Image 1: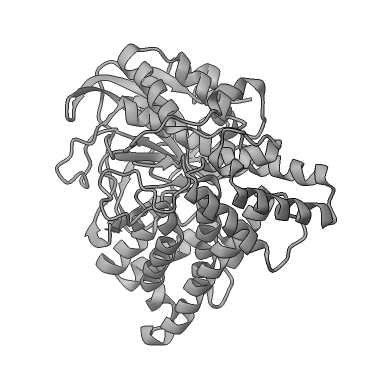
Image 2 (image 1 turned 135 degrees about the horizontal axis):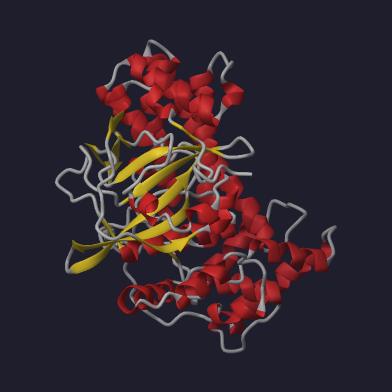
Length: 485
């Protein structure tokens, strides 16, 4: 039973054991008239929180009141933003503690949009309602899809107006993550800290996320391998679901292997490797097809930060670090290929699997086929007669080769299609649907469409009748996303 007085909070603040250059103590800004917009009771239960005691506590989730045990900080870090290195930090976020769950797991609890910090760089530190609801929806959809991600515990309106391109309602998002330690945190330590500072960060990170390697003689090299493998698995998962992060800067790469910092992200509709949604990504640096390669670039920057810990003579450490980054390159390919086999029900591996998969993707790109719905149609064996892809002779030839493979493998056809159902979601958070429900919420105060879409996305592999209306091919549109907060 939880303690009603502290509402189930079981906070620690181990990050503050690090040297003080890594953070600044800061209080969240007070807000005028906070109110709950949405609260994640299922996540709260996983965290050990007592929702019945918290349901009237909007002030906690707006930053007006801190729970017992909280020692709020803003974290310092750096990062390569679109390739340019700069000093950064939590400019509008406050970490108010690490929640220890009933099963012994540790999660950061962070308020996003809670006011200015020493790292705000001229910003107001505030966030607005639409983007906070968007992060809540997308991050919870990612969780439903089985993609490692930070999650959203609550959105609270602040009762204040925030000035962006126009006056907008202010809000605070409560974000939950395994940690907010980033590749950029290590770059910051390497650039502005001592070797001892960097080592303290690395040892803390290993203890928190990879305790199994603490006794490893070459633990910093092993740490690089571990983080690279997590990133390879994560980015392969993005590719398999058609997710485009939009800002794969090194400050947005969590060493835990979770997806964090949902800014101009979106899910691809028509399959095109050049797809990019972010209004600021004019060169397509972070396009769908570039994500695996950018992951390697980010891992190379992480490796550079760790060289001095691997060997006093950094030149001696470079060959081993390169090997680790090269392992990432192979791993992301392997994870992706295995995931694509599952999406196509392939159980018995063969050397020509990649060719079969690539031929399908090439046809999808040629005929501008919808990424998710193509695999959904194959899963359901419902090939729309109006589809240019499905009616093409090249696809019919591909389909026959695929069917021949499924019929000859050790698993039954029924098992193959069941495997596909487990790896091809019935629905994704379609961009036009997300914009529709956000507009209803922000402009009309109508949250029912938002809640309905959120509920449908909770189990995207269910293939329920209720999900059908969200599964239709989207309208043709030139869709752009923005970093607006």
